[in-house]
Image (cartoon, rainbow over all chains, first blue to last red; front, top):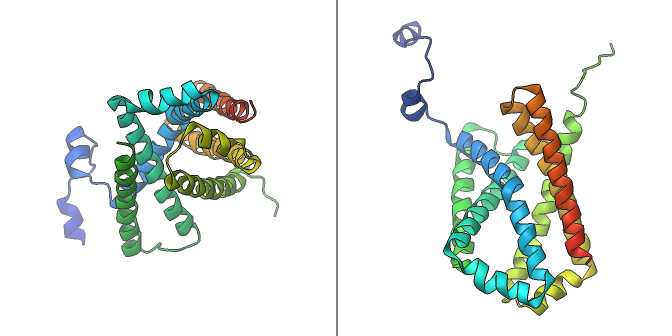
Length: 135
Length: 112
């Protein structure tokens, strides 16, 4: 053990190549940081955007038709919607995982890694499902 | 021994609030997703959905839950990454104002 640690150069500095190619975030770490990033996006701008859409679509028949047939038909708007759907789906699935972790379900390393993969895949699958419906 | 842990007493309450509001929003999301997936939305059905009392109350509950949930989450993010006190405080106040606007806007949309 002493020889193993002696081989490594210490201290290790966080250079950009080290961050990109050497230090790899474990899967639960990816779920965590993506949960944070998606949460931040949902807070802003997505909530504001959805409130705008809800406001417009409930205001009048014309507003509803504009949102449904014109605005949401624009490819760039659909792309934004797709980002929203992924953010929500991932945040939702990862959140359920955290609720389970809070009551001590799946805290051992093997299960934690497995559920992390499930969360990432479920988020993408939900995005594909709802994405197919809006496209 | 009585200990005073200054500034940390809000931790458990916020942690719990974030989880309870998450559960409320999850239930609302599933209900709305099922309603929306069932049949194509027209202006009349959309309008009728949000005219129902339970839907208005549920949506308002969702909005308030979101504001509380996001406040805890965004504050955690700001505490982790924004080190200058003045800037962090400004951004926290900005967050609270924006969340208040969201809730106010929701009420305005629902009870027009």
